[in-house]
Amino acid sequence: DAKTTQPPSMDCAEGRAANLPCNHSTISGNEYVYWYRQIHSQGPQYIIHGLKNNETNEMASLIITEDRKSSTLILPHATLRDTAVYYCIVRDVVEYGNKLVFGAGTILRVKS
Amino acid sequence: SAVISQKPSRDICQRGTSLTIQCQVDSQVTMMFWYRQQPGQSLTLIATANQGSEATYESGFVIDKFPISRPNLTFSTLTVSNMSPEDSSIYLCSVWPRKIHSSTDTQYFGPGTRLTVL
Image 1 (spheres, chains in turn cyan, red):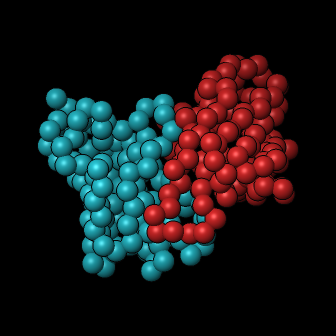
Image 2 (image 1 turned 180 degrees about the horizontal axis):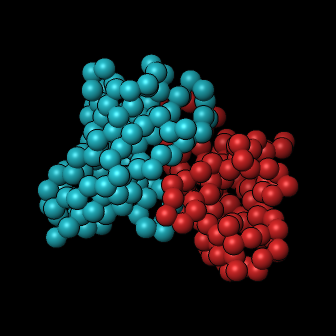
């Protein structure tokens, strides 16, 4: 079973920041938080991941709370092409190669 | 990173037939996985394809229905056997590239094979 809880859908105005929340209250010390997205009819695309520190790359920022029980993915300037299903996944890196278990994800709709 | 290709990209098949889906990676990878995505649903892991040994199947999936081969570190096949309309899904290949874990590691997905069973 997925270890994360996400809202089923969100809307965001084009050009504004999209903030996607994720709850992972049972996360253990070895588990990273990963974010993927799936644009319609394509394979999932990796976005970002982190353990406990905030992370930023060219696509997004990941903010993880101090207790690690929740996180937020931030797309700083959402475009129409960011419309997709966003999946938050926790993964145990000590158990090398542990499978990614997908939950339902959040459908993000970016509107002009 | 790893670039993954799948063949075929889509197919329409008749009930009772079988289809073999190929997954090719541009570099040697340690772990390969097969996922299924039914219409309107999230991804479900079918199995882990093990090089040189039998695949490891998740609960609800069996080898007779979804036989998997992995002859080397860059290639795997998934066969959907004795198909029914309920097998209509997108089938995705995924890889975990490196043998030695790094905090920068991530898992990559192929473009998927869209299967319709009539």
